[in-house]
Image (tube, rainbow, N blue to C red; front, side):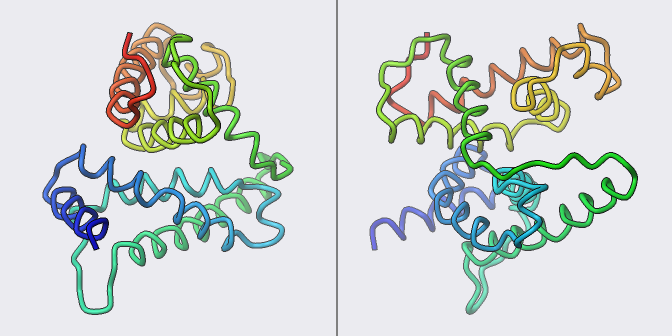
Length: 210
């Protein structure tokens, strides 16, 4: 009951526009949402999308729509997130099909370690090697915090981080994809890392803020 009261309080603050409460609420929901997406990702589609692709899109949509959430009889925040995730799977499936027909499709083998490794590398970058713990559970918490933090970034910052750090594109490739100069992309990445370090520092007591 205490946990549920805490969740309801976070939800009320998040709906009212408190971004820190929303960040904490999404972290609280993270494991359950990830498991729901993994179960719902259709056979065949998982060759094109990873659960992390869908999870990131779901988080972004939830952040954008949180002010519209209205608890009603029989409706829960968990169910609201699951509805968003289901719609994200559907829209990403359509987009993937369009890319395939347009010649931009790239086959991928589903490997849950791949996105996790990318996010883990980003955690290491954000902490500048000053992480004070290496336990698997602690690393998982940090990766989740960064995942939610990326979803909370402004659009261009999020896209820059996704292309540069999660997909491993060069600065020039990232600049080309965004239609910006390399100098402008450096600025986007700098501001994004400041935000992500702040999110990581708030979400985990095991990581240094040096």
